[in-house]
Length: 246
Picture 1: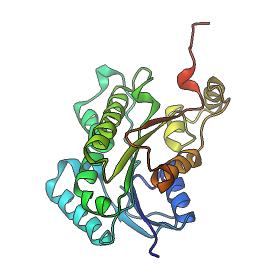
Picture 2: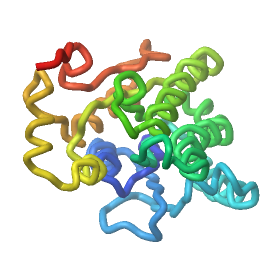
Picture 3: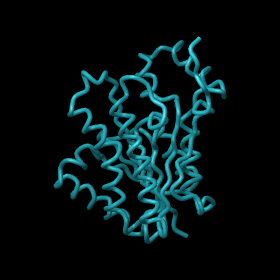
């Protein structure tokens, strides 16, 4: 029996590495992509891919898609749209370039990958797992582009489930704070700030990349066959918490 195949974007980040490890550990063939030329972890196949260029450069997009289709001749069981671009800036300083890059990376590339890989996904009766963010629903100042693009990804999830859900299931995971370099950078690598953030969560901790990876694997697996168009919170309870002024 041939192994199932997963395509994972943003594979070189904290969550991406955990996704690759989790799927490979369960016997899947993992095709990993990211913007860097190479990665230092094990994967079945690594293909460098700039998702901002996928959305803006037709020739580059065509070449990258052809490379993917060439290695997906036996089908695609799961596409995990995990890559993200986060810009933190007040609205007065948020450039149009960064706005577009956030939407290109976080939403448009996901749309294009689903559209162009629909054949392999349908032939495998596969699934799409989009990694959204709590910022789509509950955000804070200076995250305008990131929050708006992740909200659009949730909308894309529901729309695709309605349109292609008879052969391809489409779901999204909505993580809150997860211990990754991206999160640490947002706190200027402040350990005390991260500890305070953990205490804000009713679970009294922030998430780990493996928490997201395990949820993604569940959504990819046939055990979740009736989950379609779902936007699932993975937030340690923080989305249920009312924050009043002290």
